Amino acid sequence: MNTPTISQYAESVCHPYGRFRTLGEPAVERDAYGEPLLYAGGNAAVFKVWLAGRPYALKCYTRPGKRNGMLYAYLAARRTPLLCEVRYLPEELYIYGPDGEGAWYDTVLTEWADGDSLGYAVRRALHHRDTERMAALSRGFDAMVAALLSMPWAHGDLKPGNITVGTDGTMRLLDYDAMYIPGIDAPGAPETGTPQFNHPSRNASFFSKSIDDYPAALISAALRTLAADLSFADGADLTDSLLFTPPELFARRSERYAKALTEAARRGDAVTYRLLTLLLSPTPALPSLGGIIRFATDGNDALPAGNTAPEPFLRNGAWGYETAGHETVPPLFDTALRFTEGLAVVETGGFRHFIDPTGHTAIVGSGYDHLKPFRSGVAAVRRAGRWSCIDRQGNPVESPSDNGRTGIPEAGGEENR
Image (cartoon, rainbow, N blue to C red; front, side, top):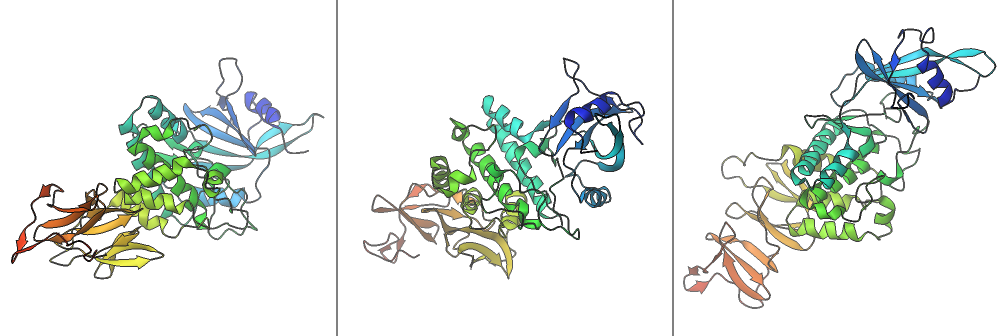
């Protein structure tokens, strides 16, 4: 007998007596027309069923994966809040063919994840112009990605539709068939992810722990951009994508992307700026992503001990800061100067700002053409060719005298880059 169709699965699920080997008689949830509630994908149908008063997702395959048994055995033995509890049930459901003959088929039973999909939650926040909700979704996604990147496995099809948002804001992953699992031999990726969220060069041969890097960076950058300004979604179709699509990005046809990059640099949001630059990476693996996401979620709230100021370092074309050889701020900046009087000048996308030793923007300097390091409590700044001074709060002040000399650079003086 050939692999069953969705309608054949539905017939057995709707008439469960004697059809299930171990589950008994699960009750399928039905819609307003009495039809079974199901979600059809490219290789399976998922039915919502009830067992002992609890809802579950019953997955039935129209194209069964060869490694499903090993994959789900691995997941069942390693519980994590990122995933729903899942059981692989070999030869669980009996399906009759057109000739009256039948056979047993494998299924997967997963706890039903309550909550909205991330995609729906984003569209709802936009509909209500809810900036706080969008910011919470951005933080929640980054927290989930930080946990995901610390795992030995990878999801394989990271997208808003495969992420559920609980009532407490916690996010969990759905649909595990495309996962990379260490130690499970595979000739290549069983799936290559959804094109709207994946690097154009991703193919079946790219199958490693890094397969989630690019979609994670894209979704994080999009959510952070929206959290800063909801109007970025105006005119965008977010049904099957999220603000940026790889084909447009790599064709350099996305005005929205160019504007988002400029605005992130202008407001001193180095994390969003660097995530956006990663979206044009020549490869789908993004080795720097983990450090950026950890910094975005955990931050660096502890100031250096004693008088030790972080020192700038360069890695892969971007500048970060380290203290005693320990990275305290990941490479986020296009240029970075040393700290003076507790603040340092950094540059992203042509805009200069002052950061504190934790890496957070202390003074937004986008209104100036140039900034110089602090000296005697003030910093020289230039706007429209004219020099003046600001204090540590960014307020204009008179230039202090130094043995009769002004703290403002002379015309044509050193820029102190």
